[in-house]
Length: 206
Ligand code: VGL
Ligand code: ZN
Image (cartoon, rainbow, N blue to C red):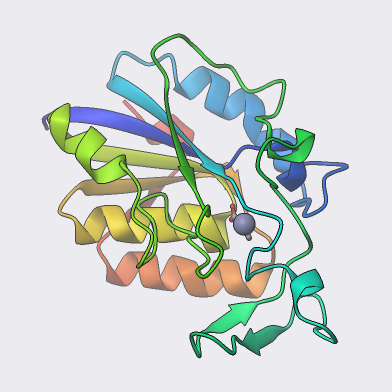
């Protein structure tokens, strides 16, 4: 099967209880991820981190009159962009990893969302942003990736889709993820299946 990586997506304070973009039941995935990560299966653990400038294009506050949680066509790029609350601002407490997420020396951290002109849901980045994730995986001879974290319907799903596109055998461990909304989670699961991403439970991980 080759080497395997665990990619822990965006387990940051702003996506958890009390955060500005809190995902329902986000804390429930912490013990699941914390026990998964110690499996000898994983040759490396990578944490992605949403890390935005204050003037990021996804923040409703940067578009006068824009309504939260609605889609707006961005004037500069013509892209349909969901209007999010201000979240994961670089260096803020909200952008820090959840204090109960187990971390170890040797964990690799990949930041994304630094480019104000594009919303990079994927840990690989969305053009024109590109992160170091692909090169990190290649350099370590990784062939299989397991993705977990927040949120299923946005950053976890997008990261898994890009992993599959880049030729990795890709799994989403569903009970180690939570989504923003049921309908977008359902449509993401559909896309994942079409992309040959395997949706599993933590008890299925060897
Ligand atoms: C995310 C919305 C905006 C995520 C990030 O981590 O899924 N969702 N930024
Ligand atoms: Zn974001």
